[in-house]
Length: 130
Image (cartoon, rainbow, N blue to C red; front, side, top):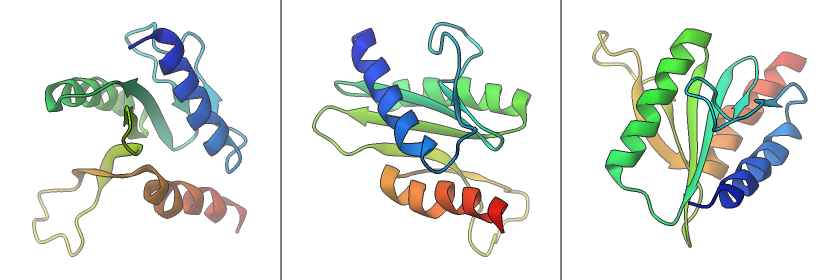
């Protein structure tokens, strides 16, 4: 992946989410440090990846690093990724509906970016206003 391609994608996601949350910040030197995600706010730690194609192994590696950082910061991890000529996707945590297995608090889910934004991100910002 070219660095400029990744930076453009990160900036696009930042501008898109920032309209709902003015405290969303891009981290200084994002992508250059072991411990820095690309975007952070008071609830989410967001890593952005844009590659020609991504294997499940690559996604697992990115996710593992992100959840370690999210745990340190006590935030919800969100991996926003895009492959060429495919829609933007999100990997994050979800609480199973009905939670039939109480020992399982969260499960990893992959969903469409626009759905995640409408269902998870925007409502969490709007609830602060009310």
